[in-house]
Length: 156
Image (cartoon, rainbow, N blue to C red; front, side, top):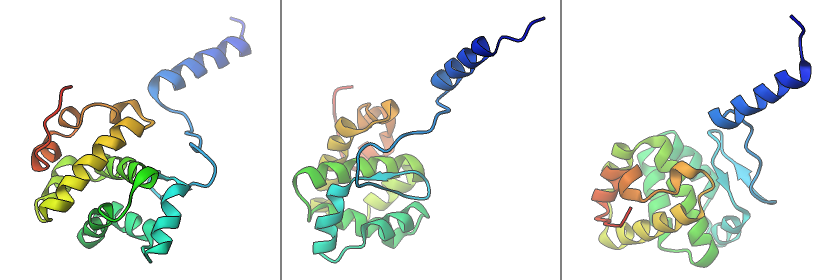
């Protein structure tokens, strides 16, 4: 039996491609990555700094399931606009996928209607901006408990 190095690397590349075992590259310059791998675009840093909001700290704490931190991120949703709002929606979607549908939905049930509506819009924008195919699906398909808590109805 002869060992074929070129063929072996081809097989390894296909296995990694189809199994999802690959190193994800940074989506753009000027990003930070949290301990669990959420990319935070640079467009979120300036508005957060201007308002005195330590975005990465609150996000890291929310990833560790700190209820207060999750609520701070929720409240921050209504204070940003434009590209930063869309990027924040992507971050919230990534966070939702990490802390779980039930935990996220439970926290949503404890916030104001205004904030809840803003989060629903941000998450919708996040599905449009998400890099991961599993997060690009309709919210009601991927995270039905959260979609119900937000009263989101959408076509899959």
